Amino acid sequence: MFNERNTSKEIQEGRPDIAIFSIGAIEQHTAVLPVGTDFFIISEIAARVGKQLDAYVIPTIPLGTSYEHRGFMGTVSIRPDTLYRMVKEMVVSCYEQGISKVAVLLGHGGLWSVKPAIRDVNYEHPEGIAIWVCPFDRAMRGPLRDVLETVDKEVHSGEFEVSCMMAIDESLVKMEHAVDHVPSVGREFLDYLPMKTISPGGVWGVPSLASKEKGRRCLELLSIDTAEYIRDTFEQILSLKQRW
View 1 (cartoon, rainbow, N blue to C red):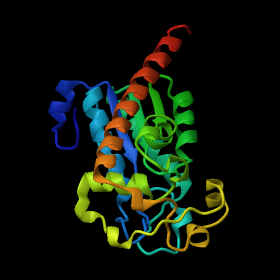
View 2 (cartoon, rainbow, N blue to C red; view 1 turned 135 degrees about the vertical axis):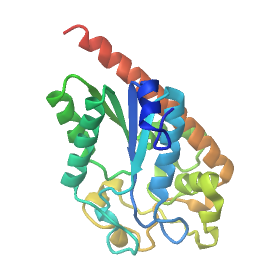
View 3 (tube, one colour; view 1 turned 180 degrees about the horizontal axis):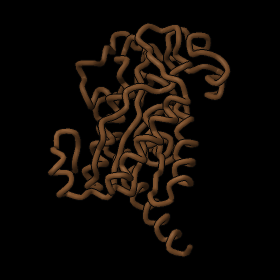
């Protein structure tokens, strides 16, 4: 694996054929978790996936589109079109140096402008392959169901995120402030209303059920599942391209 600690010469000699970069967020995560929670978790997953794929892991973009968390101190958001351009330009930058496969890992649910960016860059630059994956969405439908008790209720600062942060750095978790709250509406309401209106405390889940062991298991399963998905998807795309 290669990352920002390597020299340009080391990366050139290693010739990685896959680059990975992830996108986090700086936004409120109640009084329990730091505002950098999404950044910390997706960075940890990206590093683990990078090792499995022997990829070049580019540092995580810390900011995302966090409109739904406006009104809470500490939340910093960028526009969807800004993120769209960043993703496209970073992918093309990888292509220009001979890294033809790029995977973008999404660490937050509101990063919807990434999908059209990946779609556009694939059609505009057929010399490379870019894919996106949201590790949490995939794993919540599969492997994490055997670990978490609240998979169907988990949206923000609940059992999953608190558990992962316990495993990454327990000193950043303030469990004495944990309050469980699961709104009676669907997750799509975050497209209509800010979190502060739906859940004044900013939580959507059951943080009281979190544990460090659950976090360790979640991070392990997420990393394995994501690496397998990236590997398999690139292979399938390459196989289909050869038919052209």
